Image (cartoon, rainbow, N blue to C red):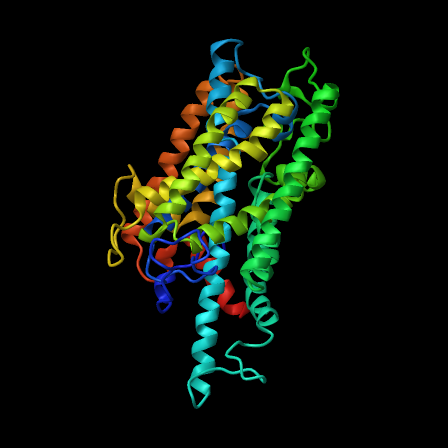
Length: 456
């Protein structure tokens, strides 16, 4: 992408290193001022985030009535007792965590792109100035009007990401995240180019607004439980007439399902609008944690604080998931899960940060680090590919396994999750092993990069 894949920082000259041992304090580097050497933890965290989203989405694929059915009757195909409890535990592990982690990775991507643009600008300006230093009209070494110029540079990237998301939304998955992230990324790009103080202020404001909205909505669901809607117990979800008197997830072809998504755009695009404030907040949090050295040897203090925060949120998050009411799930997905994700990002940083400033390799204490890193380098291909494979397995235009075995949803979800991951990871590892040249970055990454070069 564009994101979820953040740019490869090794192509840029080194930048200043944050103060050793002072990350997260007033001595921390400003956003974007992290060394440009390759940080393996970025790829690993991105890979974990993208693969983790499938843990939530797989339950939408295996529901006989797809995403719409899952919103109104999520326990379809699950026997009361063990299977229902297993569903609540498994969904609790993924619900909201990887969505939030991916938001923070997007924010890191924007900050890296801004840092690279600053270095290119300084290099170009210094080369054209006799003294080697850029000066504004008042003699300050600051470049005037940098925000508009930076946004003009970033706009094609955001526009291309939006197009990627639009194609993904129409043809593959109605729960696409790329379209919303394209718009959020552009807003965050403007905020990052202002000042660290402005960025912190926006993070606090948007975080507070989002928290108030979630608490208000959760309270309304508790006071008015019928507002959550209920399914007809006498009707089979596989037969729900969701569109033109048919269930498009079971009875429609590939193109008909795309038309169904277009007809229900307002419903399917509600979450990106609903989470806009959360996106701005977490994009900025991710950028700030990266600037504080969460993936470097300097960020141990920041990582400890974030891991403590995440650990403190785990009991509440687990309890809300087990309760499983609409109000509890809403609070879990959009509040407690974000705090757990901050701790998860710090944990990944702890397990992958180099031991010394001169180290170019990660610590290697994270199981599967090589696989996660490979996925992170092809995250757009992985994100789109895993949804495409899952659709081919479970939707009516494919094998329609969900429709054939509607009473075995737990087994289908767990088995389908493992099968889709195996297919996608095998493809990624094979591609990176045998493909050379510019296309080695991944098929969709290569196409996006080529399109971006033509737009510039």
